[in-house]
Image (cartoon, rainbow, N blue to C red; front, side, top):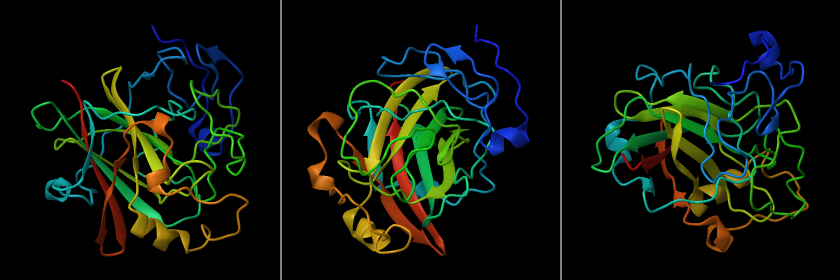
Length: 266
């Protein structure tokens, strides 16, 4: 049975205020977070996904045809979760920007099973850093050059920008409005994702962005502001990360669309 969470008003949650402190297996979290159902040492941490909102077909930018030729992750392709995963608030809906500045990006992820059929009702978590390389919930200098390895880092800030969870629609698609991520020392530009079926995690991985797009976006403000670290290119990703896929990028009018196929073993 999931532990009882202290109540926190939606207004307070959106302002990033935490409720009275409490602990789960993973340590202190804010009341807006979903409970984590696995210990922090697990490779496939999962969350209590009750109440996660469904991704809306009516508001969707991506079509099913857009995913033909898009990158793929899953089954034999996986990577480490990274230290910054949080079972973030599932009530924020499609827009997860949290007011962070950057090039608007719509990330569309399509979940399918072993046969390639879409999986409606799967829960997709998406998280990434902001234009300056900061992850919400974590007080870590992105230019420090210390690349964390191993288990999950316990959150120490109440912020939850650029994190969200949505249930896939009838076509197996979950779509998020976010920003093009920046970089932090030691890693190429990337976004993380996790796929759950019910309360079981089937896939935890990440995807890079094409270098031609990285060059264009990093020349824009606020990405172009001076940093004490330099950007790592895709071909220099550390070997312990595993096989990170690459998003397909499509311009659809003013919308920049990042597409990825996610296949899970069911």
